Amino acid sequence: MTMRRTAPRIGTTLLGLVWIALPYLMAQPQRRANIWHFGNREGLDFSCGRPVNVGSTEIISVEGATGICDENGKLLFYTNCGGGRRGTEQISGGIWNSSKMLMYDMGFAEGGGISATQGGVIVPDPASNSRYYLFTVDELESIGSPTRPHRGLSYFLVDMQNFGGQGSVVKSNVPVFLPAAECVTAARHSNGTDYWILTVDFESRDLVTVRVSASGVQPPVRYQRKVPVGPFVLKMTPDGQFLFDGTDLYRFDASDGSIEWVCFIDNADSYTFSFSPASRYLYAVRKVVPRELIRYDLQDVAIGDDFELVHALGDHQARYMQIGPDGNIYFNSANFTLGFDRVFVSAIQCPDNDTPRVVFNLNSFTVTTNAGPFPGLINLADFWFDDLQHEIDRDTLEKMICPDKPLVLQPACKGATYLWSNGATSERISVEEPGLYRVSITSGCFTVVESFKTVPGVLPAVKIEHDPFDNFCAATPLTLRAIATHADTLVWSTGSTEESILVDFGDRYAVTVANTCGVAEVGVEFPPGLCCSIFVPNIFSPGAYGINEQFRIAPYQCTFTDFQLRIFSRWGELAFESTDPAVAWSGTSGGKKWPAGVYVWAISYRVGNDPQSRVFRMQGNLTLIR
Image (tube, rainbow, N blue to C red; front, side):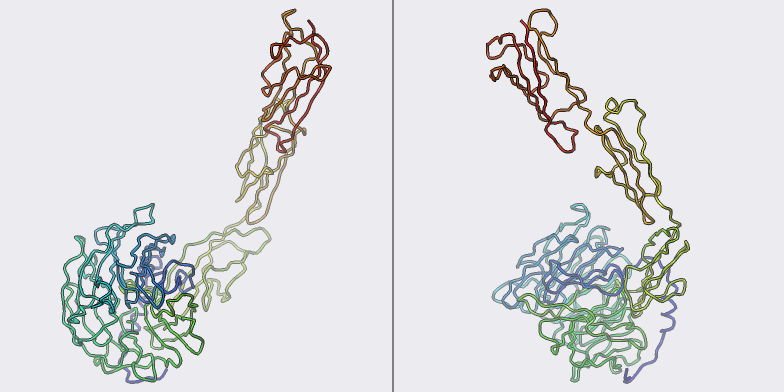
């Protein structure tokens, strides 16, 4: 890195010691920014530190987009901040929840503009742990437009307690200030509870602050800017002490929202800039050719005059910048030598170090809509990155070490380097002893720590128990119980995964259990076949002797699902028919008394406990005596 006009390095060592001393499991506000949605249904996931592409989202945005996660990094909702036309495509505004469901349809008349550089910003509601304010700002083209009214600065209030935790909009499109366009950012109030929203009056070009407190959104207050043009972007240092508008640096008082001019910064591009997470440096693109990444040291006594060259851009065109939850500064970039249908995300790694590193084309996205290449990323309140931790712990995962079988440990997260607690530096290790194994996964200046607690493992075991019996059919339906130990899964040969099953026909029944260390199976066998039996008399005498006056079958252990009885005379004439096994024949049917003689009966049936649902048939002779 070539140096130009450097300033004293004050406090770098102290900052490093603070990061190292921070407890692993303390609150990590930076996780509020874990998931980014932007562009043409694109996004990034920072759950493991380094960003991983997220596709198939609902958002289409040109520039302004924003979103927020909970304290653990789980996405709550995201938005393109408003609708409008881009090229030949009409893009609707919307707010989506974490399940990609449309929480609120802004259409084309609410929210901000589709090409506002910073279309919106989200802050928590100081009066509620479940509500969030989404502030949206319109695009510059809307001011004085004859085709649609200017929307200015508005807000939506989202309550995440509604709809089973998926959230809903409880206030929508509430006007705050006109005319406001292109830029909006936020800062914490010094009381640690309230927030400041900052934008620009595009008539006077004054800065505008709006306080958000437990009592709601307060009236806007103006502060004069030095330059009566622009801006397109407003950025606040994470600690809330400095504000930059692309041309001028201001000092901000978080107790009353007042703004004091500090200096003019002549070399910075008014679109592409960001403060570093430790609020030490202002990074920007130099606005003269050749284009270069530069930075200003806010501790320099001559901030506006002294800058340092970070990296030449060459063929890379840098656009919107945003701090990431891993402490890097990310920027939308294009490289037309690689084609016009791709958008890249590049990074300034370790931006608070003496020697930051620039990595181009870290993530790539293909442009697939008529909206064309998108210059924006997500717009986040940078106060989430104040006191940013450079090392975070993920949950400890318990694993079993099986007898005579080494266990391979591999972290879920990927990184540039790996360091295990046993000194290994490979991505995965093989262990044979129980204990706690930790791996530090580092990318740039950010480290994710994953922990594995390994415990002694044993093979699973299982046995089948049931009540004792002398006759299987008499004991049905019979309960079989699987008594398993050290098992993670259990499945019967019938397909059931319950601990017990009911059986009512003879067969072999087996149960299989398994864990990481192996599989065990045990079976029990009963006399094959169904227990259902039907007893049929061969003679009856209606109305003669007081016994056997009706022909009636006697089923045993039968649950019929399909039954039919038919009786024929010796000449083949149908004398009786029934589908109810409880109905008897008295020797009469259709008003006709059938004569004495030999008859033929036929039975067909299915039973409910037959796994093959077979049709069974029986037939025989019957003598009718009168």
